[in-house]
Length: 496
Image (tube, rainbow, N blue to C red):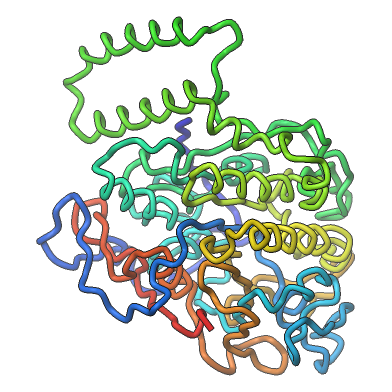
């Protein structure tokens, strides 16, 4: 399924793309590192590898669009003034001396399996998915709203797919390596889909294979804005609801394998007449067609996506929400052979939805966002552990930024706005540390007090764990070598 996106955009706080000045120049996006690049990707000499290099064989990336508040997740400030601390209290965890938000009780019990970073920071307090999941050094609102902008850098999952494809000599895998679900990011709300999770300079052939989800939510979620309540599938779905592959993903009823093969042969005859296309277009087209044939003919992908094949007890363990069942599908996809699976907890219905809590902050967190995340994330980690998969499956939870230390009391239910000077996130498995807390924020959770860590460092460390040297390069839009993590550096302290 190929979609081309790009639309003018206004930020959720009303700022237009022209209102935001960014650091440096956009010309920096085409980083020039030399002229010795060949189209197969050059790896630099190994630098700083640890004993855990390559321990992770696959990865599940959970992307929480909108950005959760550090105070109400993994960095509570119980001694701060009420205008900072807010309504929610801190609770103890399975790691002595470590506290997290009281509305994450299941995660508190498994903290001894997790790594929490409390000192993430960067200069862009906007919905910077591109900045969070690629090596791009500079962003603005324009590039964030244009998935096919030529300045884009490739998504981490696309790079993993590309490098594995190079090693495999282009042979098609039985399962797609790079899958994203439950639907194309941004396709179910009021703005055009956002950039970030695409192959960019590597070509559309390395975009994730996206799934689709058509049913509406079964439960009315707390209001995103006054008068804006709706049935959100991330709050509840029916047991009969299912994910599907974008563009169907299975043979149409009444089309036998023999008939399908006949149609394929006819199509290939027509394709031979199309060889006046340039080589890159042919290469991309052929790979996408081969993947489509593989998915349609084998049914393996469709079976892996069908979480309905799991026992109801397991489905309920993950939670009967779109996020819960998507995480269950992610585990099934990894078991079936996919290497990099992304679960997007996206804004649904409204742009300022999901974790973007400018309005109704406390009711949305308390009655929807935190309980659902707590239930599902804890289930995923424990399920992977019980199946013997956790040590080889890296679980990354990523978002754009954090939220302001001072609460905005004006909106109904209060609010916290965008804040990137310090924020927190959680990771598990794949050789990351257990019971590990890295970095520290100041007394109000407004700035880094110790050990600043860039989102690029998280990507670099993830690549290291996946057996990819963080100094590896891939081709940029001009065919020159592009560092896969930009300025990111491997951070051994994340491994405990």
